[in-house]
Length: 150
Image (tube, rainbow, N blue to C red; front, side, top):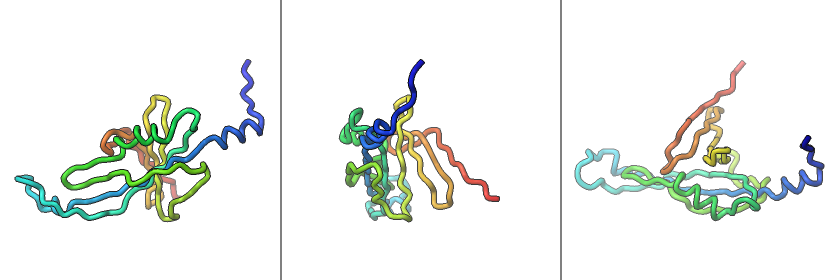
């Protein structure tokens, strides 16, 4: 029989070893692509359109922040004729750190037992969306859940 109990001191040490990786991105939209007919070279008229915040809690004894950023970058970054998202910056913080504005909806990332990165965030209308992160910002197994209103 296995002892599954963890005393409070050990539990506190486990919690304290978890760090928070925060990744900030920039979005750009090419307004020149809106009226482009697809022939010739796409007109270039890029505008900055905000960005996203991605948050991943991790155990530094198992992963390094650099390794995680290297693995997440191709899942986040994308560029085509009309849109671009790229990493601006990343930082490692205490697990309890909250460095985003109250109106912001960061995307929280976890890793499932298959090794896939799962993204989850609350939407502006109170729903929660989640998906498996795929290369170039694509999504797989997309789900939206909404709270029932009485």
